[in-house]
Length: 397
Ligand SMILES: Cc1ncc(COP(=O)(O)O)c(C=O)c1O
Image 1 (cartoon, rainbow, N blue to C red):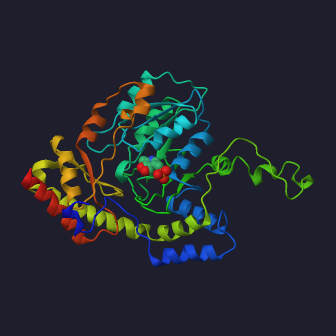
Image 2: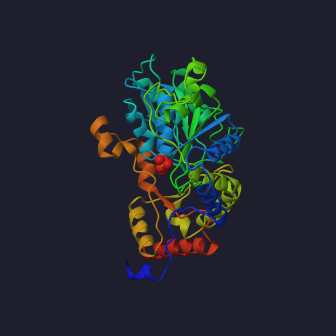
């Protein structure tokens, strides 16, 4: 470890907040008869659906599983096309590849990192979509800012595509001017959540799909458990079947969430408003400070927005050349930032499939962005330290 960082606490860009009540809730499940897929999982799913304002939630082992399940259950297969944003974690695109589908990337707003509906329209025009297949558009409400879901839905619907919102960053965010809340499924058939420790809720690993479509929820529940479902047996000659009988109707996976994770999720969900309030307070302090000198001399800020859920606090360097030196400067002083994201089309795997692609909005955003620390447990003192070190970077640059 560097000598500068040995005497200081490291500040990560994000981390979970698990308290003693959460620990006790998990221990209660450990002492009970059910540790997998029992009553706590059902309670978590009901609470999550209620919180998102939708009919159903299907909780799974991680957000990537939630993406895969939602695409597969909608019928994505070989010959389908999935259009998404390159400013996301690779999982949003990878889940299409698990289904054998093609992936296309459309551009983003260079200031917010969110999908640009005009670029979506253009990509759809340039892509030959087989209308007999399920084709999806998957916007990400990046960093916690609601993507322009109403416009995206309009463009997608005209082309016969369905919309799945990747809401891994945005539980609790809402839009301006009457736009719907993230994960409310008002402009999408389903929405995907992640409960990775850096996200709004932590279940260690974990994720969920929320939807208003009962049939879709049933299919996802069946597919998360190998394609075996009790309800698929009920009704069809069920009275003639012995109690031990079960049937696999189609090929699924083991994407089940445990009751241990669900117990943690329930406790975390109870604290979601508190977490959001703290994230918004920290973001507001950053916003005030960074809009002034010396920060305003070298940083731009994405536009502020009331309903932003602030999963990440992203700053944009006026001069992209300074981004990496600032990252290294802060790291030496125990402040660990991150770049969200390398555009997914730049990864060798996708270049191997799609060839070299460079979208101007995504490239501009990528070259300038840095996520600086923001998480509910961050103290005011830690935030001041980040600001002081950013100012010191400017002084030294
Ligand atoms: C936008 C986005 N989608 C999907 C995922 C995948 O979630 P998980 O890590 O829970 O599999 C992530 C996780 O980082 C993400 O940021």
